[in-house]
Image (cartoon, rainbow, N blue to C red; front, side):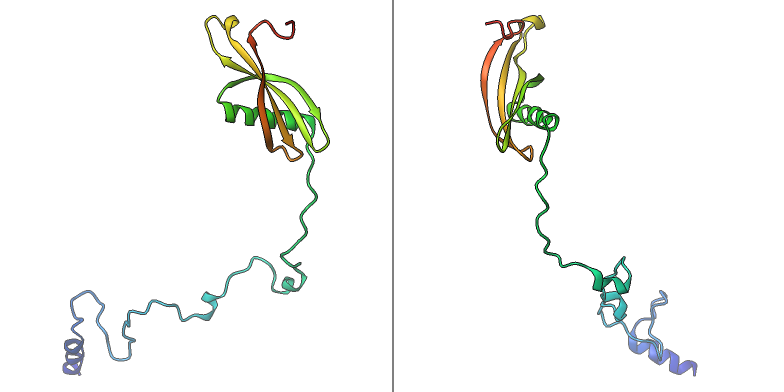
Length: 151
C-alpha cells in the first residue's frame, strides 16, 4: 500500500513537503476559483423575504421643491460669494425675496490694509434660486471702511 501512495505522489509531482499533494479521492485544483455555493451568488438583503411584495416601484415622483427662508438664503449667499471671489466676508447687508429667487447683499473685504480702518470693502449682490443655488452675482459697490451708507 505504501508503494501505491508513492506512485500517486510521484505522478502528480506535488510532494514538495508543503502538504499540498493530491491524494486519491481528493479533488484536484483546476485553477477555477469560482464559488460553487449557489447562496453566494445571490445578493443579500437586509429586509424580510416577505417584504419584497410591499416595496414601491423605484420611479417615484420628484419630492416637492423645498423652499428656503431668509436666513438660509443669506448663509448660502455668503458661502457662494466667498467661494467665487476668494474674499473674506464681513456680513450681509440685505436679503430680499423676489418671485422665485432671493437677492442678497454680501459685504466682503476687497482689499486689506494696515490699519484695518483703511480696508476697502465691497458689496456683492447675489441672486439665488429658491433652492439656494447661486444664479448670478455682481459687485454693486466699493468703498473704504468707515464710509458705509453715508455717501
